[in-house]
Amino acid sequence: MTMPSDAPRTVRPFYWSVRRELWEHRALYIAPLAAAGVVLFGFVISAMNLWRFRHALLSLTPDKRAVVASIPYDIAAAAIIITGLIVGVLYCLGALHNERRDRTILFWKSLPASDLITVLSKASIPLVVMPAIAFVVVLALQLIMLAINAVVLLADGLGAPTAQMLLPQMTLVLVYLLVVLALWYAPIWGWLLLISAWARRTPFLWAFLPPLALVVLEKIAFDTSHFGQLLAYRLSGFEQAFTVPHRGQHVIGLPEIDPVSFVTNPDLWTGLGVAAAFLAAAVWVRRYREPI
Amino acid sequence: MACIEARGLRKAYGATIALDGIDLRVEEGRILGLIGPNGAGKSTALNAILGLTPFQGELKVLGRDPWTQRDQLMRDVCFIADVAVLPRWMRVSQALDYVAGVHPRFDRAKAEAFLAKTDIKRASLVRQLSKGMVTQLHLALVMAIDARLLVLDEPTLGLDLLYRKQFYDSLLNDYFDGQRTIVVTTHQVEEVQHILTDLMFINHGRIVLSCSMEDFETRYLELMARPEHVAEARALKPIHERQVFGRSLMLFDSIEREWLAALGEVRTASIADLFVAVMGGQGGQPQTGQTSPTTKILGASA
Image (cartoon, rainbow over all chains, first blue to last red; front, side, top):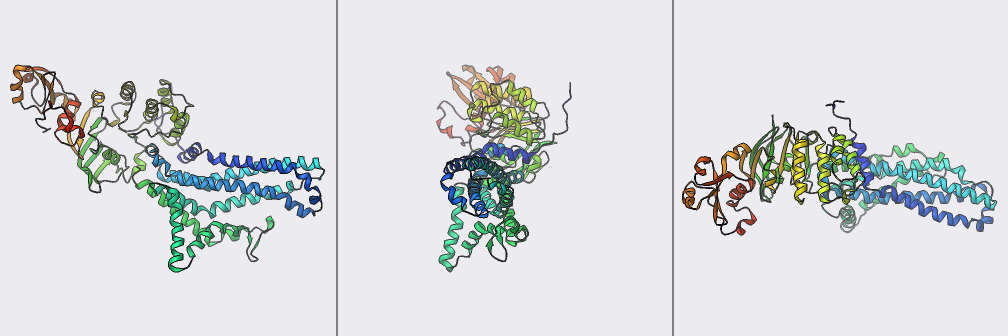
């Protein structure tokens, strides 16, 4: 007979809290997979029609042909990433609100997973887990598309497929884009989680109406739009990571990407600071406000 | 060391006073029943003990302030809240995985052994279980946690008699070891009478009665007076009298059993009878106005 040990077992509350989120919110991976299915369906239809553009394609220079060939892959990546962002917004708005609405917070709070660990595990979903899911789904999707492409192109006698040469580069750019998006949008995720923890009802309205009202108010009162520009910059500013600093043009290839200028951008760090403040406030609200 | 110690515990929601300066001390190894009408302040008291609500006054649970030291406290304290709060989307196996993953004092084998005695399947979702089974599952999770204090807020609400009986039997036989402390609130007082070691009535945010069950059994006696002795019995100032089938049932506080035995049949009072006697006179209870006209409140000095 073995004696039960008195030493407490080692536990991993953060790891299991993240697992718990994935159990509850299966849309986090089902939605990107569904989007991949739709993209794949469209791609198969268009690949079957490829022979119609045979002459047009053959008349292009190899460089141009590579650009044209890579378009469906970019569309596929964009579809998955945008789906992931939408799912992320819906997830964050419910993450700290639904547990209060259905009172399950009384169960979670009966266990030694602190409010800090809980909020951080929920923040890790849009910051780490969703980018990782998007990466795996996009990569798998692009590989399948490549395989279909190879079969169709060879069958049509268009010669060796061109897109596969681009895949390593596309994958690197994809990783860079996902990291850039996660860091740049961090204050947005923090804001949504804070509202989710704070709002007694309709977190969706609380998250979007007050900033909108502020924009309108500023316009009426001062006839300026600094706040609106700030919001627009936060939504679109990640593009700087893909802009050649002094020319103001979009980067063309991997060698032109300059992570150093992105990482040294003070706006990135301001955003991360704001994100940390929002998350700290969310922890505080979950900890010190009465749960129901 | 006292498990729970409160002095002047106060809590107000705006103008409503939920707890009006409570003093209490619960030693380790006790099973305390906290009994009171709806809105008496039971849940507020429990929430304060569990660090879910801020409070005024002094409160120490296992030597810690539950509001400021909640994270450390929750390793030694466990609770079942007054509603079915297990997440409905969760599978039974996931609930076991999760609690095992976050609680250093959870004994999975014990929870599995308890579940094996029920009809609950590992693959079931919580939403597919009956209310009784959800409570069984919650109890299985909680009983497998080696906590020093277990707080149960209306754990058997809405369950049928069989589940309720089984719930308290399991708690007493499989969980309670004489060192752990249990605090339970319930309206089904008859069912907890035999498991409690201490009893506390709370009303309007104040403790109106507090005694150990040994004291309870010697102090409170119920007399079914023979008709010829009714006047004599009333002279002993029962704290409550009611008529059952034309006979007077009187509840006495601290009257010698032998004196009463001479006047009729004597038995130990039930918590329910005492509750009615004590609370009925307080006017805090919705059913006060609806009690049958034969119930007379003769006094509420407990």
